[in-house]
Image (cartoon, rainbow, N blue to C red; front, side, top):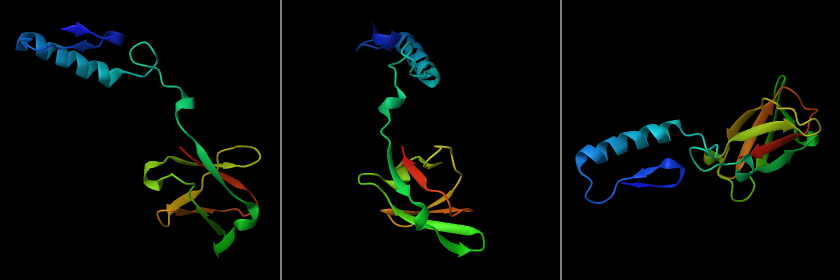
Length: 125
């Protein structure tokens, strides 16, 4: 057995079952509980997550039913709807706004809201 960085145990060729399987159990437990804090695994900072955004301007809202407004916006290049976390924020205050976000095509999405007087910044993470 070899001890790697962050205390990770690596079985070596020829380790018998009474050594290999306890190592495997400890690895499963360790990776189940890790949190990337730099102590038990390599740290991951929020800066490591790429963020892209696009603006849904105030002028883009259209009435689709009484009290419901919608905009269709294009996804930024290299963003895949199905692989992104999407968050809407009011452009000026940066407050989270809860919009209904629906995939229209592979390159567009629609956002629906109960207002038409706010510019919304749509973030893709």
